[in-house]
Amino acid sequence: MSGLGEHADALPAYEEPPPGHVSGSRLERVLRAGRFAVTAELNPPDSADPADVFEAARPLGEVADAINATDASGANCHMSSIGISALLTRAGYGTVYQISCRDRNRIAIQGDVLGAAAMGVRNVLCLTGDGVGVGDQPGAKPVFDFDSVSLLRTIRTMRDEGVFLSGRKITRPPRMFLGAAENPCIEPHEWRPERLAKKVEAGAEFIQTNYIFDIPLFEKFMARVRDLGLDKRVFILAGVGPLASARAARWMRSNVPGIHIPDPVIERLERAAKPAEEGKALCIELIRRIREIPGVAGVHVMAYRREHQVSEIILESGVLEGRRPRRRGAEHSTPPPSDGPAAP
Amino acid sequence: MYRARLFAIRHSGAFGWIYGRLERLMIALDPVFARLGYNRVERPIALVERVVKGVLFDCRMCGQCVLSSTGMSCPMNCPKELRNGPCGGVRPGGFCEVRPAMRCVWVLAWDGATRMQGGDRIREVLPPVDRSLKGSSAWLRVSREKAARLREAREASRTTLAQAFPGARRNEPSTAPLAEEPPSAVNRGQRR
Figure 1 (cartoon, each protein chain N blue to C red):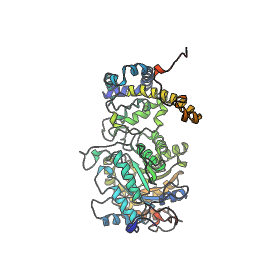
Figure 2: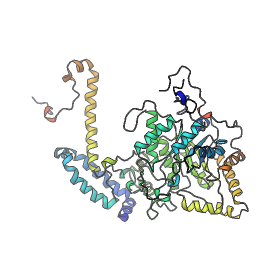
Figure 3: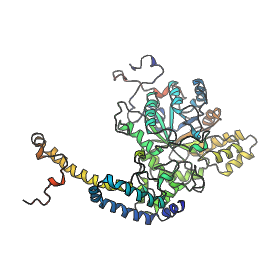
């Protein structure tokens, strides 16, 4: 009784979230159950072939509770996050649909949120977005109609109040688990936790941080987060990723906005005989240390062009020990109520 | 006037105080503006505002001034026009991701807020900018808002009365009127 006719196999039906949850998301279930969560970023294809998306997702899906579909990150054009998310939900993966405020205004974004939710997307990550100048088309018009914080509040209003920002009613609101980013190792360090508080106030329920390579700095950030009581109000997933080489690390540091890699990390890669292996070992080490920090609920793996290593990194780090092996299709496992209303 | 802007933020305490006074003056002037007609005073006041705030804060006339909540650092100077910054791209030393020669507007804002009375307002989540108000006077908007709040309070008392006497409201609406009364209809001194 899904009401979806011939598309019933491919599309998850509209569902009310389980009790105590805001969405039907597996990521939300894992986090609320107190388990250490893993998310991973998918490298979006420059292609119109769905097979390329599924191929990129395969090495991540084995270990990730949800796969992030980036929204033209670094202002570089790729397949859209809504397209990737829609494909992944059809294949049964949990996805985190990333929205950047850089390219679309409030009319487009609110419509896309409904569209994504209808396609089975249950997690959304609200981002401000990098400036257009760092990307492959610096002549583009930067939009920034929302910022990440006002975007969070807008989607929460759509979900909880069932209205657009204009006040017009939404008959079936988007049941999404709301996420935001944070960049703990970037200036102004003393105000980062305060801004996180604003994001939580605006509606963030989970946080995925940018890369953490500087543990002492991150520990300081987390101490302040705990002082503010934020660790009790939001699930924090720390961003990690394997560095390929010292050269790659230096390039990232100077060309990608918001990346902090301390010199000792780069020197360690420089000294290594096999830098890629060293990068992987370092990543595993970081995950283990991050896991010990109170208030951290999981890790978010961003392994740009090293997606093949993600599974090994997570399994070797031991963060999934005690968890059942992942099976696909678990995102929408809640059985639809037998006598419930049919979807329109 | 990048330098003037930095000066204003460095002295956000004093500028915040002056700005607060000015706001109060504008609110007090609401009856005057209302009498002249807000529509008629809009252009001249907006012109003055553009010049004064342009010099001091690099004001972009968004029409929705939030300087008191942003440490006197105008957020419209942020290339991403964030209302709840800073973003995650701030460069070492607190410089802007998009314009590396400029100090991050939001790093300055959080610093400026610490020197201001009521600086805690920076913790409030601000809504997206209404782009249709660009170029209009934020000062006059403040006056009107205050007037609207007073009007709302008057309306609330009428609504409460109407709800307390629903039968009378139904049968004899004039005994529990909901419409706003024109000043000439109200006998203020209640003299006979």
